[in-house]
Length: 399
Image (cartoon, rainbow, N blue to C red; front, side):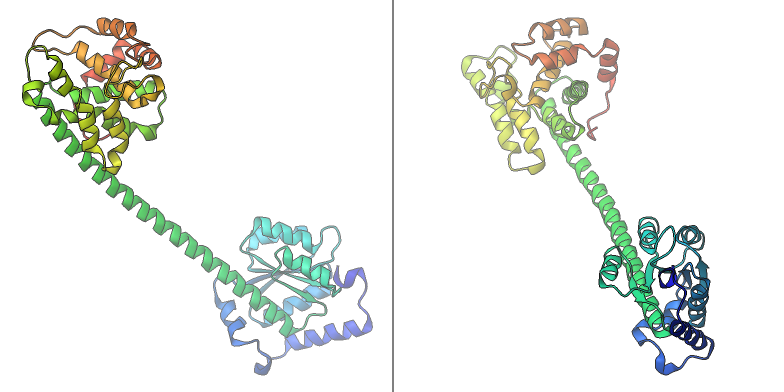
């Protein structure tokens, strides 16, 4: 409450009476606040005109409201902290001028509530006690200013001006931050779109290269696209993170890129290869990895290309890797490639059905193939495989 729940003494009544008289007569320009803190300009800013005065003493509310009205503000009053909270929600004032000592809820409680619920509102606290500890606590908890009673016109004017300037700076800073965030979001979208276009261009280029390679080797149409889709279907069934899917897809697509370096006499030979020719053929994983090395976005795919002929039991090539030393993408691809090899027609034989492929791949789980990958492959129904293999659209964009 005002003056700490005590009735004002004679001297205090005189000072308050003097303050009321000051508020009622024309202002003296010589007593104006500094130009930088001019209330005339600040009061004209939309949202700045409303000030709420909170005090349990009616006379004090009347005096402070009169001072604010004289400065051009729209002054409202509340007899207590809880009533003030309701009015703040309704009126949305720019500044609250509140007594520190009041019955039930004090000014510090009101300050805390305002800071939590109305971050655009500045709070000035008043008290009849001029204790340093109280002032420090008020400022530490977010008060814009701290004044001792009785409050004179120039004190209140300067305090309100400082509070409004602080509020204005905070609002401008928030607007600036929102502008920056919007700009960053817009640039991020632009970069994402540009990356998507570049990625699509890369994929189209890779597809054209692989299609040419398939044609050179006389592969069945769309072999590379089919093994990509099959590899991704198994990877998804295994719960491989989405972030890894692009790399696995590129590795599957480019698995035989190293065959560019294999002589036609070996690559296109219609009969069985002799040992020397097999030695040449076994070089293609190394050649493929070297072709892709140094291309940053293809480095993960290069690891799959290098290891796509490795076997779970270590009997594969070129490094004889075994078990989980083989990259997961290569282990998944190995099953997908076997499925395509078994079920696709070749010049020298007809493709076998899916049931046969299931049995063959299941038989080599734990030796040629990772048993977990085989389990995931076998868990995919015939209907799902029919849908996957019926997709004849070329590989243009990674899922």
